[in-house]
Length: 154
Image 1: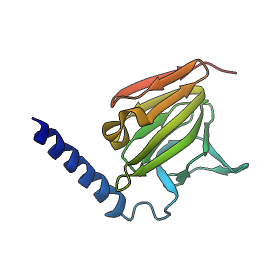
Image 2 (image 1 turned 90 degrees about the horizontal axis):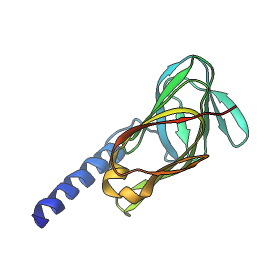
Image 3 (image 1 turned 90 degrees about the vertical axis):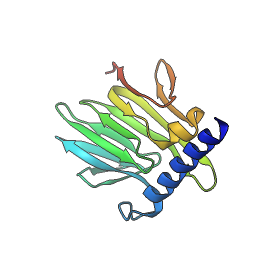
C-alpha cells in the first residue's frame, strides 16, 4: 500500500513537471498563471499600476484582481489550480510557489470582497497545508477540494 502511494505521488510530480516545463503556455518565469476566461471589465493592479485584463493576460504573485459589476474572470495557475472570480470582487494573489523539483509549494489568496470559486490543483494535492484562502473573517485551509467563498463588502 505504501509503494502504491509513492507511485501515485511520483506520477503526480511527473505530471506537474510536464505542465511546468513541457508547455510554452507561460513564457515568463515569474508568471503564476493566465486569465483563461473573461466577461466584462477586469482590472489587475500590479505594483500600484492598473492594467485592463484580457484573455491570455499573465498574472503574477501579489497581483490584485478586481471585477466590475456584471463582470467575471477565470484564472488557471501553473499547477492547474483554477479560480473563478465573480462580479464586484477583489482578490489578491498573495503568494504562489510551485517548484516540484525543490518541493516548494504555496498558494495563498485573499478575498476582500465578492465571490471566488476555487478548484484545487497540484499544490493542494502535493502539499495540502500549503494552500489557503484568506477572508476578512478568517482563513480557509484547502485540502484538495472545490468550494465557493462569498465575502460581503462595500
